[in-house]
Amino acid sequence: MLHRWPAPARSLALAGVLASAGLTMPNLGHAQDVVWELVTPEEASTPIPASDAGVQWRTVQEPGAAEPAGVNTSNAIVWRELDPPSDAAPSTQVVWEDLPASADPLPPEAIAEQHREESNGSNPQPPPPLPPLPRLQALDRSIAFSDGNVGPDISWNIPNGLRWSERWFASASLLGQSRRQPGEDFFAWNNGDSVAIVHANVIQSGSWSLGLNTSIRSVYQGSQAAGGGTQVGEGVSSGFRIATAIGDTGGIAFGGEQVIQWDDDTDTGRNLYLMASKGWWLGDQGRGFPLFVANGGIGTGRFANQDILSWDNPLRFACIDGVENRTESFSVDNDLCWSPIGTLALVVNEYWSMFVEYRSGTAQAATSLSLGSGIPLRFTWGVNFAGKNEVIETNQWTWVFRASLGF
Image (cartoon, rainbow, N blue to C red; front, top):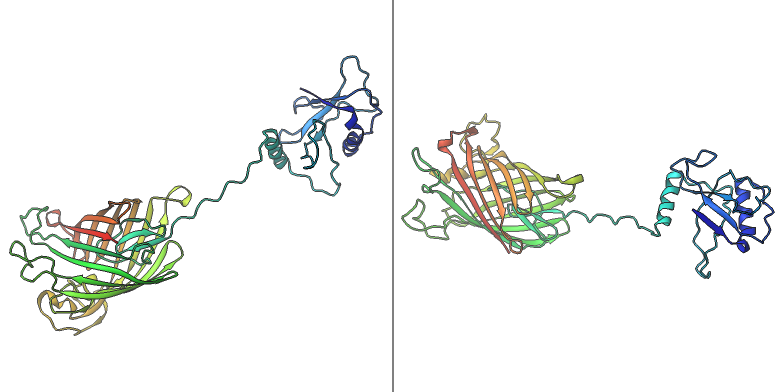
């Protein structure tokens, strides 16, 4: 491929090129143009690294023209095209600039990239930075995100340590579990038990959130199932929740549910807790789903080991005896003891999760679905597979559920 360099432009430019290349300015006159030929690394008389991005040229003799004296045509000259001044008229002349001797030469890789960009007539910009991932938050037992989206539950009964959602004010839930005597059907309700609870985020500032909650112990009245002897709405109690975010994927929360009991019909325990949560994005290069969330801490009341009352039980500690003086199921509040609680959850995507939960000597395995992208409607179902800190026989398994709506 031949490229002609018009004679009117060559005198000053060629002198600078040859001087920088260690050559002597030839006496070429002005009658004929100088013709240059592209030299590939394979054709060069001196080694030219393949990674060298300067375009290699040499002078060639046109048919019938005398060879310019004093020019070593076998010596390759490295050049690159310069952007003309903005006020310069369009021209097809090749313009050269002699670089200062003190200038540090670009490495071959940088020159190669520069030449490829110029050859393609493009000036690519560096790729824009990827948008940051949303911060992890909570909407009751569900995972939530700082962009306003709400995912599925990451626990059935115990709370998490994440800051409350910035987008959603409150969440109402109905949760319960079946019962089962020997010979009874697994999928039957079998006089199961349930409770309703409403959480409201009343104050938020920066990374902090403060919420209140109210529980209703009696959600059924009638003779078709146990617990129907009390009117709907009885067994009212209240609690609180203070949480703060730690970075974008963690948090710590302290609070309680059914702490203040407004009547004597609450048997769900004064459930104080201190929880810490941490999430890890497991997607490509640590971005995106699936999301793994570890959630652990300590709790009292129905969160604690109530069915193992031995004082030497290491899972039941810091007990305060004689707080209440109740009988039967209400005796859960007689002693205030602490026990470890926690969950491990895998949030597969924005709509589906799986988790295991441990509290009060029992363990559940459950799955949860977030059913609405606009309205935070979530449903969770799972099984109790352990009790009194032991794995139980499958014919004794019971099931749990939770239905939640955010607003």
